[in-house]
Amino acid sequence: MMLINPKADIPIIQISILKNQNAAQHYEIGKVLYQFRKDAVAIFGSGLSYHNMKEFKKADPENEKEIVNVDFDNFLNDVCTGDEENRKKIIFWDQQKGGLDCHPLGEADHLMPLIVNAGAAGMRPGKKIFESVFLGKFKLSGFMWDEK
Image (spheres, rainbow, N blue to C red):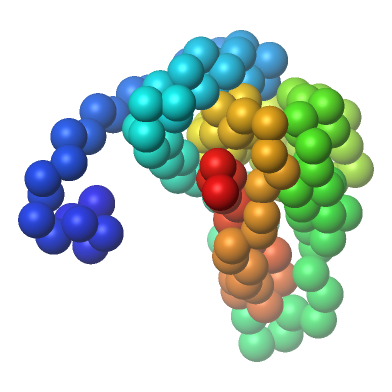
């Protein structure tokens, strides 16, 4: 946060995700946090849209020819940039094509912050603010919701 605000004159409170990685519960936490957004509190979530450590370790950037998580990245884009009703589908991330390949069961801790933020999004659709290909094989995306 020092990079965003070097004066460090804004209070920051860190909260943890739940150990259970229950997407519905994380979404509900976000809905509660939305109340703070009404008071101009910013909510940040960190993580990755793809986080399969076994596949990261096997990747050979010099020889990769195909992005492996296009379907799941498209799903995330659709739900995060859709309306509130569509966004709720993020709760079922593990039933989507490629979902469990991108975030194996028990290792979805890097996806849960996005689900919390989706719950805290309010009425407006989000927008994709970041897209990159990591190791020539894994598409990574970032999303943001604002009230403007």
